[in-house]
Image 1 (cartoon, helix red, strand yellow):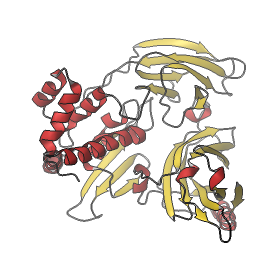
Image 2 (cartoon, helix red, strand yellow):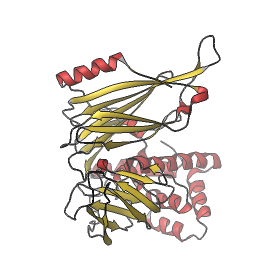
Image 3 (tube, rainbow, N blue to C red):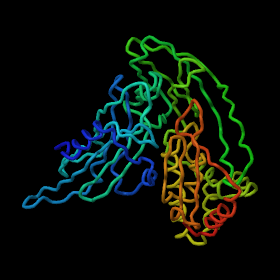
Image 4 (cartoon, helix red, strand yellow):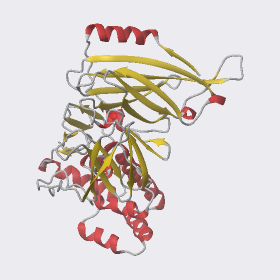
Length: 417
């Protein structure tokens, strides 16, 4: 594999560092919640190496790249770029660091999980916004992601490395049952509290509901302490569904939170998972009848056949509904499963928005044309909590009532949007 840093990227880096330039990171980011067959980035994660340097690890499926035959040879080759831009925040968006690295690979050398590790400057004492752009140069397609990197305290999640079954756990920190090995080289011979929460969450209230959701009881269901060794290592045994908050004491705001929903997460593979998600499309009595059916598969099949009218239409609705459910798990997991969050609810029913604008503590989703009277606009605010920085709540309004029930009727009438 050949690697080169583009001349343009070096110029951009020098300019950014010298001039503290600005760029709108909160312009349309709709691509961050989309996925397609040519999506060659598998996952990524950040790790704070020391007080001045952080590292991006990005795993690429090179087999999804477009390979083109080189002239006068039998060699097929692909070319791709990985770029990053480090910003001060979402709104001022001062560029602090950036670069672009180009990679080439021949088809016979391509692998399904190529790891790239890229270091960048990030000083301790603040959080950062990092935009990652991955480009398949021969397909002329771009994929972008935006993530926060937490670096205010050694207790922040990006100072931890989490390993399970010899595999590094990525940004969502969703783990399976069994032993999890954790390292924080800055917490040597230290004591850490593990607070365990084994909760079941109801689906979110409809967008038009102004009722107050049930209050979350922050008292842990169980608590114990662990001791790090002289290299900052310790291990946990994950036994039950829930989330596990790791902190120095119960008042600490900086922490690591591990989540265990099921061993196949974020994928929907069990009939119960498929049935649970149908609560969005059912009224209370109908959903109770679905749950009471001892043949879960039959209940699910009957639901979709009655809604869609034909087997072909039902298959397409099933495919789209559960694909959106899986993507909601991938993108919106916090201390709740992603499909069971406010953003997950809107994403499943309405699909990916056409426009997404990110701010420091909120997101705005727009369906249709921006500033059009025919568009639908949803705003989500970040929920302040010690468990996850990925928890957002919908700003509900009675104005959503008509469009919400119109969309539910469309699903139930076999009309897919």
